[in-house]
Length: 588
Image (tube, rainbow, N blue to C red):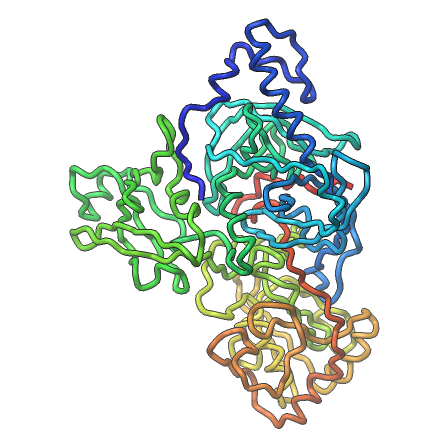
């Protein structure tokens, strides 16, 4: 892992601010003085070497459709950028190749031949992916780019190389480092003012020394010249996981949610903090399934992490005259492999606690292919799905869907397998007459028993022997409950017709173990895997296995459409406010 500290920047010393040339479409337009000619030559050599190691990616992808989870979206075409690094790897963004069915690579040197590439490892939380090209001819005469071991400094010149919209050939844009902070997950990121447009995603960003200082990733919506790059410290950590399958499991976290700053003297006195101590942040909640469960407590005050004191505004020193949010000290470590020493103020004294870091687990899954999948169960035309960000993004124009995201966003997973099950839509049929207008509401009970996930609901419906199927929903406005009652015999009889009308292969597809690909559940299986948790939940009334199978209906095995090993980047998941950044990859 690359440390964030860096010495004097070659870049800032080489090119004085007052002598920077005017930038127009990435091409130097002003005349250089004799004194500035040598520094500019250094930059030119670095950019020239960099362009030879950059590739254009031609991607065909088939995204999942969370609105109609029994099918996928139409095939889409997009382009992106990648670059060669040591180990004969090609680095790009995860969102460029997520759900890809074909990735072709064309280098800027040698014959303009497109070679087939495959994804070796993909990390959606950090938006990075590593590709390989098995054809030996591709690598002939190719050189890899070298990664900088230093975090760029403010006002350092940077050069962004890629294949953005507006043309077919390689493009170079230049800018400066504007800001260094963390994203919504606490990962380090660097803001630059060089143009990052669709098609630039995955391209290298070079410093004046010709070394890679980051990977172009996204830009700020409705703003001018605000782009974000993934620094090489994050990239180096990710590349260290390539040779060990499964070693990258996500972004490291303490599992304590958003801390409370302690800038109020009255609050500090209330917590019993010593007068001579001016830092620290309060823990408002500890996630029940998080790494700090039973180690940290509510109202603990975090004083330091690994000996680095946390200020009362939740920041820590980064470099001279620079501070950054303290989560950077956590996310720079590898989840599942590394620990952090937390010093807390508890009951009037200091205590040290070692926490093995793991990723956060959310009640509302955020990333398709990482913690969410297109699960569903259809009962008498009622389509039930788990609430997730990919689903909500497709329903962004529905006020009820937006309200659901706001209501549950940021809540930690309370227990394994728990989901917020919602009625996404109603496939109209005489058996569900009177309920055709219902959509995007949370189901709370089935036949009087709480519903905890879609797999559990599917199994309950299959086992139910009551003459009526009764679902109770929570109204979006909070003004009571909505009840849906279906005749069980009519619903079972209508299943085949409903499936045929909408070209649906299976009445139900769920993740039986809470991970992997959705598949039809076995109603005869008493294993707790059917609800994705270690605690089996039984809904409705048990029945004989033959009758249970009858209630499932003719569950045709859906062709194994892989969730894939890819995980799509996307714009960072939306909290209670709209997302501020947009990924730049898709360029048709």
